[in-house]
Each structure stands twice: as C-alpha cells, then as structure tokens.
Image (cartoon, rainbow, N blue to C red; front, side):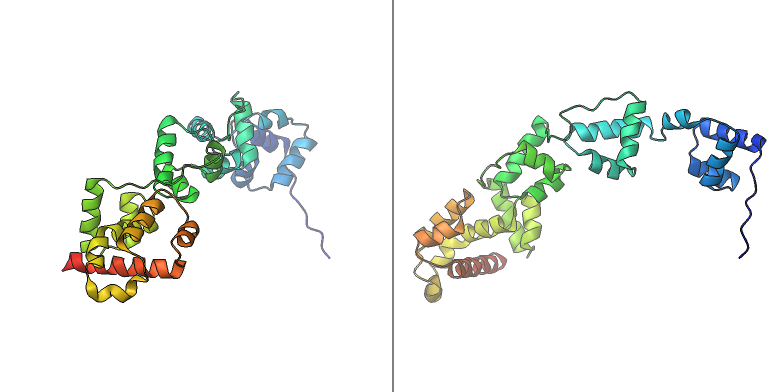
Length: 266
C-alpha cells in the first residue's frame, strides 16, 4: 500500500492563512480559499508556532442584525434552540455570538412572555375555540410560550356579531367549505357548524316532513345545547342531561346544517 504524501505548508503561506482567519474568515472558508484541509492548516499553525486560537474563539460571523432578531425572539418567549434554528445556526454559535457582543442572557427569556396585544389576541382566539397549535401559528410564537403564559386557557365563549352572521349567510350561500368559513371568522369548523345549526333551527323544525329525524329533541332543547356549546360545555355532559347520544345529536346537527344551506341557496 502506497502511503499518501501531504504537501507541507510553508511558513509564508501559513502566515497568510492566519492573517485571513484573523481578518474574520473561518477555518472552513480558509480551507476552500487555499485548497488545503482544515487539519493541514491547523497542523501548519502548530508546526510554525502560529497562535490564533484566542482570536478565533472571540470572533463571530453572526451579524448584529441577526443578534438583534435573536434577542427579539427570546424576549417574546422563544427558546434558544428554536431561535438558532430560525437563524440557521447552531445554538452554541448563538451563545458565542452573545458572549462576544457582550449580551447577557435574561432569566426571563424563554419563559413565555407575551405582550399585552398578544395576550388579548390569544384570549379572543381561545374563546372562539381555537387550540394551542392554531393560536401559536396565528401569533407566530411557540406553543411552549403559550403553555408558559396561560396556565389554563380561557373557556370558549363564542358569540357572533351581526356582521359575522351576515358574512356566515353569504359564505354558506356561496357553498364555501366550513373550514374556510372558520378561518375567515377566526374560529373552528365546529363553532361554524353550531352557528349554522342555530341559523337554520326554526325553519328546520317548522318542516313537518322531517319530524322523524328529530329523535325526540325539540327546537328549544337543540337551541339550549347550542348556546351551552358556545360557552364551552362538553358534549358528553350535554348528551347525558338531554338523554341522547353523540351520534344522534350530531346526525341531527348535520341534517339541520344541510337543510339551512339548501334553503339559503334556494
């Protein structure tokens, strides 16, 4: 087996390389620029007794703008790991950048601090039935931050304004998908179903030919169930109180929804 021979790096070239690194280049960049491996460069520095370790450890390629963005993310409750991922760097690189630029870690970073505006927005969305994941996407912050900020999320208390009811009617007339309507009204598709049922309830129960499909649930009972669902009561407790079953209740909901949409289109 022939042993591979490596070209030695002269002192003159090694000093040029060290100057390149001291000017801000990384070992990887120096390796590409001079066509030598990182191992060969470090070996040459050692052989020629060129010291640059202290300089190298105290420089960073992370820009001031990136550091400012990182601080903003951490102040909003994001974790260092997630912040580093967004910036496209390793978390160790981020920590070194903070050390070099003299930024000390605030003990409150990553603890889920939300601004007053974010808190108000999150509460409104939670009351409309949105989940941690959906609120996290809307606010652009992590679920961990929400968990830390809200020990217990507000119970749903969905109420539609006149404008929203008018918009719901228009969207249903156009045949818009329930999930799309939910996005427009900033709620869930379940709440859209309940709102549609409440909208078409009176007409449905005035239709004699659908008597058999009512399953002993009166208009008043359905209306009360819907109102209590809007306030966050569980379906399990309601079906027990009204002596029905979940499949029966939701089958009736879907029939009323279908009838309401048909009437609006006609």
